[in-house]
Image (tube, rainbow, N blue to C red; front, side, top):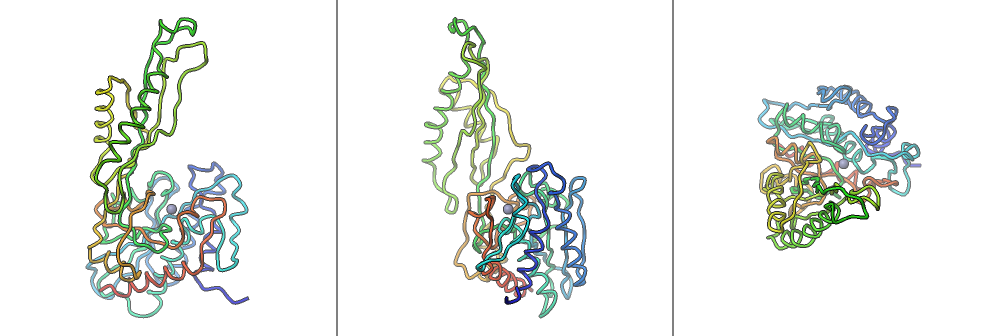
Length: 380
Ligand SMILES: [Zn+2]
């Protein structure tokens, strides 16, 4: 069998190190962002790169691997994939990387150890041969916890260092992504008055009240959102009522009913604004409900200017005419909210992410390394 390219060996090694986000599986054997970080740190040190560990929460740290420019630092480009993966109980077999028919199979192959391997290999290649940038520092940033609360990118955005562009690794199929929607999760609670099921007129039915609210959200509010002007890369905002719970048994008039809603936001929209809109709708309809916020970390929208010089250089290196919007959330949003212009880029198809059979085409992996190398070597 022909020997594999270094990037494929690297990706196989990374898949074999489990790094399931602790939010998804309790078994500490399967956690391991630190294992991936240690592996990369050792590889970086062997090449003479500077390695720094940035503690985020106990036991979980971002990894920073730095290539200094030949001269003084005038700008900094971040290569920022996440180190964690999703996971499920039937995980074990996905830990064994398999190379077959031009693809690498295994947990994280596409989301997002493929990007980790590509970004790190590109850094090693630029370090190992050819000219390195004169004034641009290249910083590989392995982020923890993207799949749950984005603790890694939120911490990095607050504590730095700052960057002039962050390339966030996700399987975009080698497209340059400059925009995605934000996401607000809200819980609405309708409160009724309990009574015996035989005398419903003595109570106030919270389930009935909530069903009117659901209808108003799914018709009037959803319709209003659908009639707004579309964002060029993202389309329109949406709402989904994803969960409902109320009542205890048939012979009791329910005292309480809650729904959880997911409202995808466009750049410029805020959680406070969404609450005001929904409160206004309920007022107009004479409906009553209280609000809780479900997420402690709001997911901000991303809308990086495609005309920024570094974004254009990367777009050119990728052979693309323009940039894209996507429907999923990434670490790029917290980094951008912290003042670092951010785009999303990486090998693989997002349709593969979070599935029971993840894989990445080796051709995508190799192409992404080529694109990044072209981009990095073209920097001043
Ligand atoms: Zn991901």
